[in-house]
Amino acid sequence: MDLVRGDCLEELKNIDDESVNLILTDPPYNINHNNLDWDKIDNYIDFMISVFKEGYRVLKKNGSLYFFHNDFKQISELQVAIEKETNFRFQRFITITKDSYITKLYPNCKSWINCCEYVLVYVKDEMREEKQIEYFKSLHKAIGKSKAQIKKDIPLADHAFRVSKNNFALPTEETYNQMIQLYNLKDCKTLEELRTYKELNYVYNGKAQANYIHANFKKNKLTSHSCEKPQELLMNLIETASNEGDVVLDPFMGCGSCAIACKGLNRKFIGIEKDKEYYEEAKNKIDTIDIIKG
Image 1 (cartoon, rainbow, N blue to C red):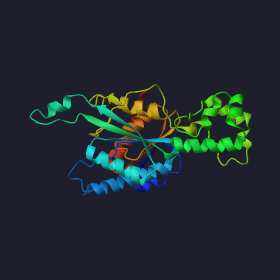
Image 2 (image 1 turned 180 degrees about the vertical axis):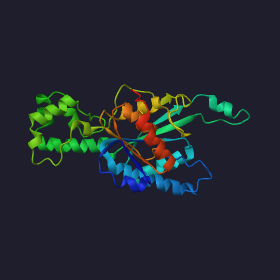
Image 3 (image 1 turned 135 degrees about the horizontal axis):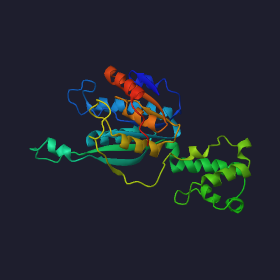
Image 4 (image 1 turned 60 degrees about the vertical axis):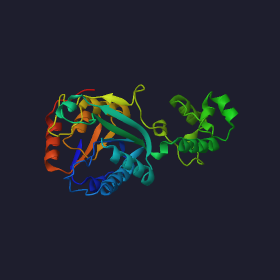
């Protein structure tokens, strides 16, 4: 566990390129009108884009960015800015439904009450099918055989060398490794880059899941942070988007709930927190709390 107290933009610069597998973070939502850090939404968007650009740099080729938010106006502006100013590719929008206790807090409210939070999922540009097709074009050139010949050598391997997105199919790990071995690609001098199979696609473990999750936000709170996310929810996202031994980064660590989840799932963790009290609580919790197993 590597916990750092400081400004996330400054501290992110100290993290090596392509050294992180997953960024999972719950950034400030900028919905507190007394917040003096961002007097305009444009300033908030600019700040978040700067964070995401650094996040893109430190993520591995198959890494993912998962971040929470709950304000649709800011989400929409963030998505436009991410598309325009970064190389992240939007992957999924997950709705997190809360218990209906929130409606009881406002019994006289004459309006719809937001009982949801959202997780936006982004992956690196390298994972786009167009980039994958370009990579397999370079492999095809290095192999020096026709698709028919490759298909004869390794059934179904030819699907990886189809240039149309409608026909292209990523090979299985077994097929990909067969290609590397049969055509001696590790020693091919004309090939600029040879990727491991893990580098061919972003990490997604487990079965298909609906893009809405119900979570109990009042159960088993572990820290004093008012916006703490449930451990069960965090562990689900971490297990889905990373593997044991991977590095998970949270540039807005708060009181360390993400770090606690990583500890129980055997993930390495880097956390950055500006607030002194939150930082100290995170350090204490991680050292003293019982490990929660996935």
